Image 1 (cartoon, rainbow, N blue to C red):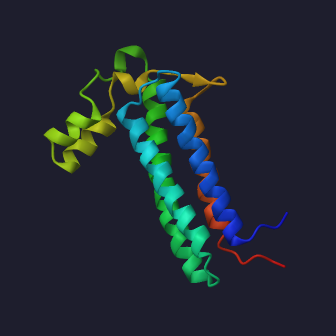
Image 2: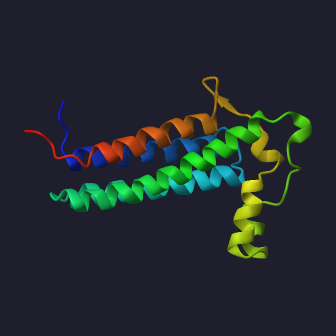
Amino acid sequence: MNLSFRGRYLAGFVVCVALMAFALYAQYVMHLDPCPLCIFQRIAVCTMGLFFLIGGLHAPRKTGARAVYAIVITLGGLWGIATAGRHLWLQSLPAADVPACGPGLGYLFDAFPFTKMLKLAFTGSGECAKIEPVLGIPMPGWTLFWFVVLTVWALLAIRRTVR
């Protein structure tokens, strides 16, 4: 099947919507509260989804314009890959090396400047090291997989569709 740029980007948007729908299902139905790193991964998914949608609706014909969308989506994907990678690393630590649980992300936003808040959030906390597997794979493992797939998908869509 040969999808157009529009089709590829709208498919990327649908995957992002599905990922966010599952994240909300996990939070509100499975009662898995998101840690700060989970929130950052959600932000990355939403950023990618937004630009997949805008790119899909715009559907530029020129490769340069397509590349702009792909670059923004790739930046969101790299942010997500880094966050999910850090999250998986925290989950792999022995219990003795896991950082103590800290305040929630809302408090960090209110109490600290943005750069300090990012540093504290990426230091992680005990709640970030809690492993909640889905089909035997930790949640950050799934998000890492999807960040890689969506980033590659966005970059491959730059090429003009052969008709």
